[in-house]
Length: 335
Image 1: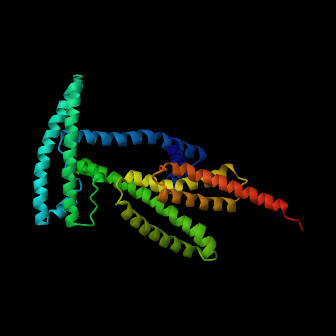
Image 2 (image 1 turned 90 degrees about the vertical axis):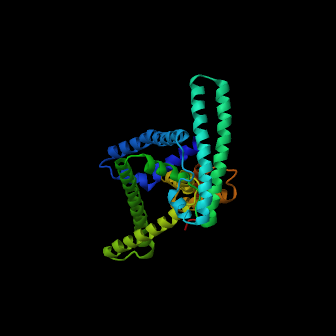
Image 3 (image 1 turned 45 degrees about the vertical axis):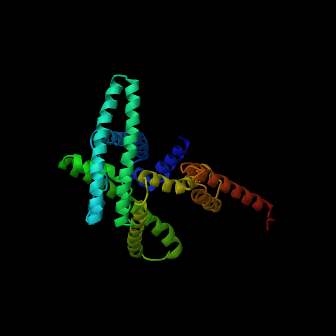
């Protein structure tokens, strides 16, 4: 709860993907309403997303799930004759286990409705054994995929919902859903690239590298910066594709930087006696601490705590440096 609080303070208060929406408001009142609704709607939205996952899980208890959810990768592998024969044999074995699962789930549901504690316990024990068998079969399928394509990513958890949509939803709904997904992705990507390019062009390039150029030059430079950040985003997305859990990966990456950014904003808004040099040094120190914790102490420190630690380190270090500068300035002889 505490770690999530700091994560969302940074996300909704400093992240350009969110702040850009507030800046688009026609007045301060409209921006405040946008912030409030953005935060309040996050709760039912997140509930609906998680609830959809539960519904899909329940659906696959009564309907046979695919042996491997990434069907395109599986189709590519079965072009190999030996792998096709092996996977076909595993599929038949998996079909039998799935039939047993459906029978046991139905038995469990009836036992729950009749408050049959003995039946519930027996059905759960059988389901645990069946789940273990399914996991072993899926593991063998992944071994076949790795044998044919050694560099293939065999984690298929992010394909569960996509496979469900493409297999069971009507075609019109599929098209509408994909259009919504692409629309949301394009909107977020455009705002992020625009923010990164603007910051790079105005705050870094124009201020420190080429401050006396014409406006046309800065427009062209911002276009090149946009293209550069787009390439960087694609490379980063390729790395994220190897993550076991995409949502967790996004929150981990955000937590590496959100705490530091939040600390800088707190100093800017509420601790205005701290000057820029002290905040800059505090941010560098905080980021070094967070990276150390992530790469060397990740088993001891949960990633959500990075947001708290980074924020506190920025505020404390910046305050100490500013105090030391003030003391040093008072002790210097005046000319």
